[in-house]
Length: 550
Image 1 (tube, rainbow, N blue to C red):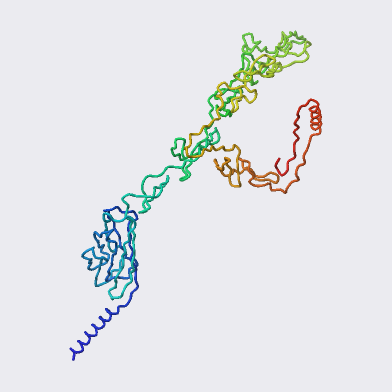
Image 2 (image 1 turned 90 degrees about the horizontal axis):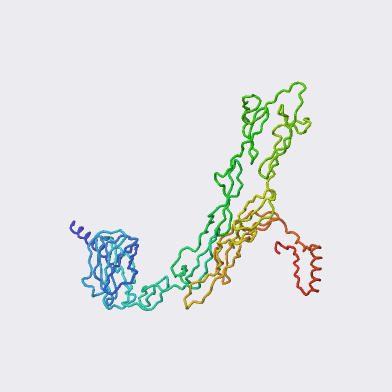
């Protein structure tokens, strides 16, 4: 009885297994993927296709079929990566397609990644162009014998031409073969277009190099067709090579010296080191009863007062000659001697006329001896020079003092044209003008156009620039806001004058035209005279301003 029951159990198990084999359940599936090289493969060359498994639900058995064109490709080898455990088998020959690869194991493999690497070679004489390799999961199940749908994938490989043809190269990209789609050959030539003239830099403003611009790649080139990577020219900076002393030092302070830029005529004034004159006290002393001192002939500064040093007689100072006052005896009568005046010059002090008592040394203004005075009151200050019109020399403007005949020279102030802005004297080293800017020869096939950028600024609300009539723009820069707008003044760009913000107040009444009645009368008289003499008189009458514009 037990044998019968055991046999029935075995039979039932076999029936269950058979049912599972004949009618397997379906399990959730992942997918296969494949990758091939993008570059074209030459005849006789090899390449590798990697076949991968993604979102692996667990695989115990897998069959992959590989289909390809045997007239173009030959499968050289199949390399199992070991991602799937168990036995690995392949077709014995690559002649019969599809080429079959199988993996079998008692339990599931759940890893994702590359399953196998297939190495192909391109047959000699294979037609150039694209060819496909299709990898399909013909059969797959897990350890429960549940079917898994992994799908299929197709990769495309390009067979290179032995000789490429077609396509057109540019200066930035090589030609693309019209058969195999691969780039080949050298880059094409640039399309230089018209020459843009150089904007020369000044001492304070940047310039722009002259250039060609390729209309294809947008790169810039110099006159020798060599690529340049930066167009702006840095400002040159001032060139102050020689300085002229300004003659403004005094006794205690250094003076200044001024240099002129050799390029633009700008001025630079700096302190001239160690140019202070120092005091000129001379040998003469001033004195009073308390002591004696000296006075600088230039600035009037005084030395510290020093005590008198009596001489051997005890009546005079041995240093300054001061006569010590002697109390005259009762009934003393001054004996006065006249001392004539010493006239002051332009740069030296003088002494006033006075009287001195030959007995007691006292000083008086008058011959009667009634108006006493101190020695310090005798000084007559220097009058200073009186300069008139100047004479022009190569060194500058020479001024002559009408009082003493002394001269002083003020250097010329040269403008950008090499002329003195005051007298018109031309600097000897000024080179002749040369405004020519001959551009290099353009390509013979390219129409010649020379840009003529305006010296005036063009602007919109965002930026300003210099513009050629053809529309080309250079030195494009954002606005530099000036002082904020007020009730009566707008905010302007401090570079180009563009109105960034209008005045904050209400609109004002437009100004009415105004004409000076005297000027109008003179104009009418001149017009009448012109009719008589046959001359043409043009009278300019100022116009009122309306809306901020003339």
